[in-house]
Length: 443
View 1 (cartoon, rainbow, N blue to C red):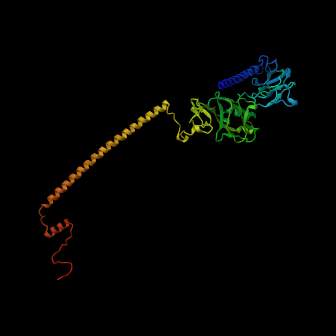
View 2 (tube, rainbow, N blue to C red):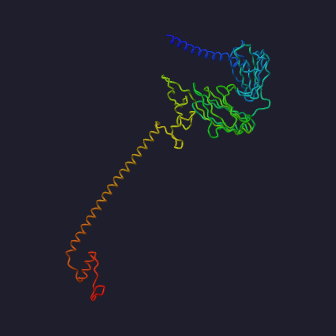
View 3 (cartoon, one colour):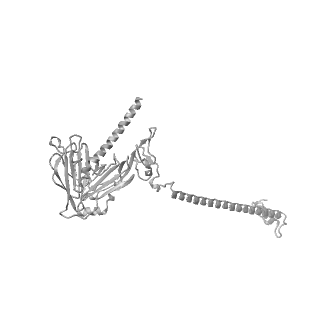
């Protein structure tokens, strides 16, 4: 009974904590609307819950972007009341502050962080956008601020319009590379002496994380290694502000990276001689392995166990890419030199296999038929040869029998006959002519 009560209490605590986090996220989003959206018709934005005091423990983000050929200008009116820094120090992450950056991302150049009771100066962007963030801690609340923005034309003319260099990618796997950058962007940067600044937004399914690995050969090649002023690559987890920046590479090596959320941003910056920099990587969405009813680790249906406490989509197995961190998904596959791997369950592959079987069966049948026919012909030749041999032997025997009964041939002497007979018997008998005797003189 006590154990049951404790279990119920634990479940209740978990549910309350979850509901609290959800409510907190909802309240944060609701309270940020004054800052995030403000009053677009009047071109105004405000601190959260304006005109009331802004709430504790709040983070709000927004960007203001003008049309091409215009700048953004912001000034603050009526009042500006944000918790001042302790001991008269700088506005920082330990207190309340308003942060403004020159661009549309959290990694854009910092213009300033503002807090206390002094109005910030009038702020004008150098491009089309300004990025803003308001942060409050868990202590004192203040009235906040009211900001007014408007758009001003670029007084020195504008460069030819070119779309922002950004890419949005979703799915379980894809390749990202400096080769994604169009030649138009490269030519524009070289012609007008401006940097390349591109962003890849990678979004995996919920409850998954993103694993990024750089290609083994020429996967990270900075034209100006060890000089982060001219070329570098940054990886952000979930958001593009500097607090969420997890990696920065500007040397000659870039190691793999695993996010803690399902959203990752990759920023590639190159200027001057650094425009010749290159990189190539592949990302894979991973899921932490779960457990079955018995407590054994198991991947969901349709996913492959990487044997490193993570799972990947089953379709990524044996695709020629090592999607698992240790490459187990490619270990049991045919080597890449053996050709393209086939899916033997695919209909077209089955049809090809059936046709190959019929062709092989026909070839084998033809070979067997030719072999049987050849053996038959050889047998007939052997029998015919044997009959000819037997017939030949029979004729020889008949001739020998007739030769013994024939009379001596006329005109031949006895000695000749004897000689012939001796020749026949394979014995040599010398021919003793008249007056000839033994070869040795004897009396």
